[in-house]
Image (tube, rainbow, N blue to C red; front, side, top):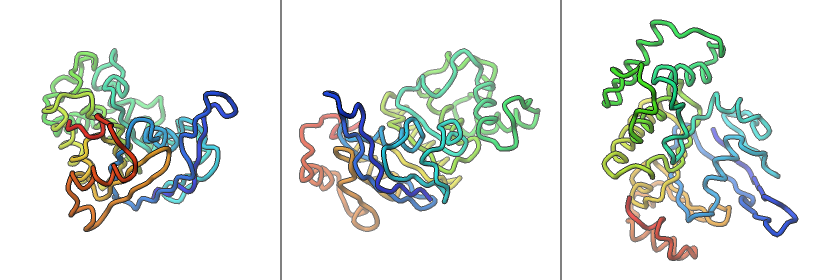
Length: 264
């Protein structure tokens, strides 16, 4: 489904700021896989997401999604089939536009049946309202309110809905609960699990919460220095405790990383 083969990316090559961010990285996801990604700051996690989303072109290697080579495809074309959420709740929505207008933009961008100049119908609005109601946050009664009036958790829940309004082939979750308080983060994670499971969405999720990394999804990978250094799935993953995983991190040379080892 997603097949990444030997991709590499070096920023500022030939300068004192040269940084090898990804090095011969390969990763293969089957349809419906939910993979959690761990790694210390600077390990290359977000850089991997940027490569998949098309924020830059990799120096070498290939990226295929559902059999299509998207290695050199512009990011705006990839956004039709790749949903993405960021750590910052402010990044996924337009604050001065209403909830309905944000949903409409997301719907028209991702739907092959609509052009950017399409008009949202009564049926579309009814569907938006129904989807919002499923979040359990009362946003269905605030569709005409500017998104800027929402809390961080409400905005992340809305962004999650926008990213999956038209079911994407791939969903990228870049620490999407890290900026939220624990109770709100748990609510957004529960919504994430529900939406991903109901739509059988192939998903990659970056997290710094070791417990969540083992509890969510069906696979876990660890990154270091732009490489995947550990992969867990099946019984090995099911039987692994948090302490076991922390020990594995230490064996890979990851030490004194308070963010990685902290509980969210």
